[in-house]
Image (cartoon, rainbow, N blue to C red; front, side):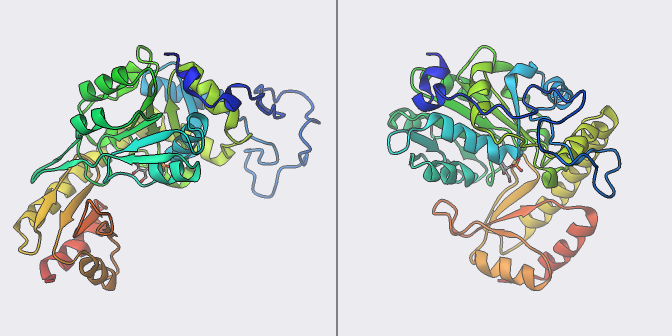
Length: 354
Ligand SMILES: Cc1ncc(COP(=O)(O)O)c(C=O)c1O
C-alpha cells in the first residue's frame, strides 16, 4: 500500500500555503513578504529582518549526508516533537484512527494522538530484571493502528529494539499503518540507524534530533526521514517558516566534521561517567532495580521514588520521577551529566537513605 493512501483525505486534497520564501527564492529586491528592510540591532549578518527559508537547502543536504539518506527523504522540523505531531495530524482521522504506543515510553506520542482525538492503544513493554522487551505477540493481536510508535533506545527504559523486529512489523502492517521509529538517542549506542531502510520500506518513518548528541536542545531542530511522498504530506501542514535563522546556523555549525568529532568525544566521556554511576548504583542498598540502558540516562527503582526525587532536590539536584506511570512504580530516571554535575550527585547518593 502506498503510504499516501493512508493519510487523511483532506490533507491529500490540501493546497499547501505558498509563503513568500517557499520556493527558496530570496534573491533580488525583496518586496514580497512585508518585512522590515533594515536588520535589527546586533544582527551580525544573520538578516533576522527576513523570513527564513522554510527548509534551508544547505542544512537539508548536510543532514541528509550525515544521516545517509536523500534530501527528498527528509523534513527538518522544530525538534522531533514537531515530527510526531505532524505525523499524527496527517495520518489520523479524529475519532476514527488509532495509534499504538508501548509504555513506558516518551509521552508526546500519546499526547499528540489525544490532541488529534485518535485512540491510543497501549501494548506495554515486557519488564525483565536486566532489560525491557517489545511484546511483539501482543502488538500482533492489537487492533489495526494507523501509526505504530517505537523508540530505540527507548526513553525512559533505555532498551533497544532489534532492526529486524521493526522491519518485520513495518512489513506486516503495511496495508493499514506506518511504523515510526524514534532514534532520539541512537548516537549513544553502537547500533546503525534504520534510516537506510526507508527507501525500501515506504511505511517506515525514522525520527532524528539534534537535541541530544548534538547538544542543541535549545535550537529545536529535528528531522523526519520518510518516503518522499510522506515528506510531501507533512510539509503541507508544517508552519510556513518553522526554522529560526539562528537555529539553522547553530545546526550547520554542529554538523561540521570537527564539531561531530567533539560530540563523539563527549559521548565517550558520558559513557565513562555512566559506568561510574552504574557501578555505584548497583552497590547501593536502596536501589531495588537498575536498568542502565543504551542512552545518556539510567532508570532505577527504589521503595519511595518521590522521596528520592525530593531529597535530591533539597540538595539542588533534579531527577525525573517516573513513578506516576502505571508501568514504572518506584522508578526514577537519572540523566548523565558532566563530571561537575555528577560529582555532587554521587556525593548525595552515597549519603542517601530512604
Ligand atoms: C524519545 C524522545 N523522542 C523525542 C524527544 C523530543 O526531542 P526534540 O527535542 O527533538 O523535540 C525526546 C525528548 O526528550 C525523547 O526522549
